[in-house]
Amino acid sequence: DRETLVLGIETSCDETAAALVRRYPDGRGEIVSNIVRSQIDEHRAFGGVVPELAARAHVVHLDAIVSRALGGAETELSKVDVIAATAGPGLIGGVLVGLTTGKALAAATGKPLVAVNHLEGHALTARLTDGVQFPYLMLLVSGGHSQIVLVKGVGDYERWGSTIDDALGEAFDKAAKLLGLGYPGGPEVEKAAQQGDAKRFNLPRPLLREKRLDFSFSGLKTALRLAAESVAPVTDTDIADLCASFQAAVTDIVAVRSRQALERFAAAYPDAAPTYVVAGGVAANRAIGGALREIAAQTGAHLVVPPAALCTDNGAMIAWAGAERFALGLTDGFDVAARPRWPL
Ligand code: KG4
Ligand code: ZN
Figure 1: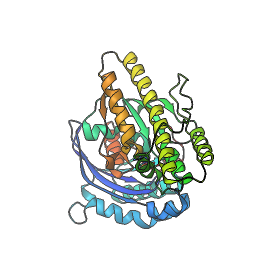
Figure 2: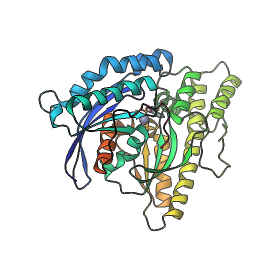
Figure 3: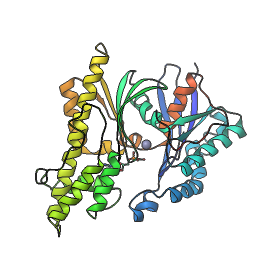
Figure 4: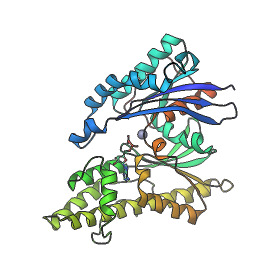
C-alpha cells in the first residue's frame, strides 16, 4: 500500500465532473480538487435531462473540466497514479464520453485505468468524508436512483430495496412540473411546502404496508394530479398545501423504510454500531433530513450525511472509488464497456 493520487471523471448524467483525490496508506483520503459543471441550464427548458443534449455538452466541456481538476501547471497529469472514470450505470452517451476520455488518458500516459460503478462512488463517499467503516447501510435518493444498500466492503454490496418505478428525485421533479414549478423540482417543492398545510391532502404511501424494503413513487404522482384537479383552478395556497402534503408522504415513506432497514441491520450485525449513510441530491431536503435524524436517534444509529457537494454527482466520489479499488489491486483493461444498466 502506498500513497496514490487518482483522477476521477464523472459524466453519467447531467454533471460534467473531474477531481483529484489522494489516498493514504492508512486508508484515509483527501480531496485535492473537485470541479463540477452542472448542465441544469441546458435542460431546464425541457423539465428534465435530455440524454442527447447531455452527451454533447459533456463532449464540449469535459477536457476543460479535467484540466481545471489537474490544476494546470501545479499538478500535471504525470503526478497522477491512476485514472478512474464512471463506466455506468447512466445515460449511455454521456458515460461513453467520460469513459473514453479516461481510457485515452490512461493509454497516453501508461497509467492504470479503473472503471467505476457510479453507485459504488456514492456508496464509498462516506469513507472519504467521514472514515466510515464496513459494514454500513446506505440510502441513495437522487434523480436517477432510490435504493437502500448494505455496504459490506469494496465491491461487496447487497441491495435491500429499490424503487419499482420512479426515483425519489424524479418524483419531486414530476410533482413540480405538474404544479407549474421550476426545474429541478426538489428545491422548488421544498420551498413551496414551507408555507403549506401537509394534512390538507391525504396522499397514498404506496407499498408501505409490505415488508419488503422497496419504494414506489409513481402512484403518488397520479394522486397528486387528482388532488390538484379536485381544487382547480389552483391558487398559491393550494400549491403550497399540495407540496406540503406530497413532501409529508414521501418523508413518511423514506422514514418507515429507513427504520425497517436499520432494524434489519441491527438483527444481522448485533455487535456493530449501525451507521446510516445518506447520498444523492434529495439528501438536501430538510424535511427528509429531519425525519432521518429522528429515526437515527430512536434506533441508536450513527447518521452520516456527506456535504451536499459530495452527495450530488461529482468527480471526487469516482476518484475515491477508483482509489479504493486500486488499493485492492483492481484495475480494468481498455476493453471495459460502458454500461447503461449496472446494478451494484
Ligand atoms: O444526485 P443528484 O444531484 O443528481 C442525479 O440524480 O444525478 O439529484 C438530483 C435530484 C433532483 O431530482 C432534484 O429535484 C432532487 O435531487 N433534489 C431535491 C432537493 N434538492 C435536490 N429533492 C427534494 N428536496 C430538495 N431540497
Ligand atoms: Zn448519482
